[in-house]
Length: 403
Image (cartoon, rainbow, N blue to C red):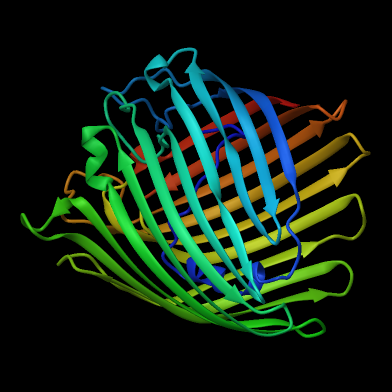
């Protein structure tokens, strides 16, 4: 789905998930008070909303173009309580479609919790919730059935240290994803992840960390028999290094080894490298560019697969023409190597696919309370099954009002 309101919680099984256990939460800084309440309206045009294949196919709806309007209320709140703090951010809105009104649905995204500090240790307890129309790109049916995707994530982190020296950390996360459409409920899953890390930081040298994570996921509505659901166990271990390079560059690189062990005969396991890299270049006050790349395993709630190995490369840049006007652009390439599940034999999207995206935008703030944004993007996907090849062009106009 397009539009600037969308926020996704990536269900990463690999190094990206475990690297959260470093000392980023242990910096001894007093929490800031924030209160930003507002409203937004996003009008989005898509040339191929349903992600239909390049050539018309008998039996599929062919109304490709559509316009969606999404009014929403937004909130960004943080309240300090001494050295502790509580926070809540997110939005609540509703999608209205001009042609495909069967997709009209609430759009809710919330992130709340608390930060607790004791001496040089910090604990973060959080809850994330999202409910919205699911992505239409990975489903092929006569009507592209509407589906409400609901995601709950509970997490807790404990990190100790003051940003200089040894910084141990542990974490736990529970994730649950559900689909409202009966045909997609075989993709409902839950997962529990435990992470641990040990970092060593020096202001001049940067921060080194070794990390490990274990994740146990299960598809509750895919069963080998009445008592055994399809499961995935994933173990990742590795290290990361973060450092500021001069006054203009900040870089992070992590590398490790990931093993994915399905409990289902016929599903290939995975054992190999997982990695991530990010570089931020800020040559002045106006320009900032970011470069990123990653490989990780991902669990999916939409595809008839057990998991996928995803390679992702991206570049983004922003340039401020003044205090009120900012330009942005970006490009992204992603390749998914899919691991099919024998318990969903009707799945058509198999083997691999590749997605290419280009985008450009501008944001203008005529006053403190009002922001106007215009974004345009193009997307192209190629797949082992040509039924999933598509092109899509999107333009979104966003108006935000801060109270």
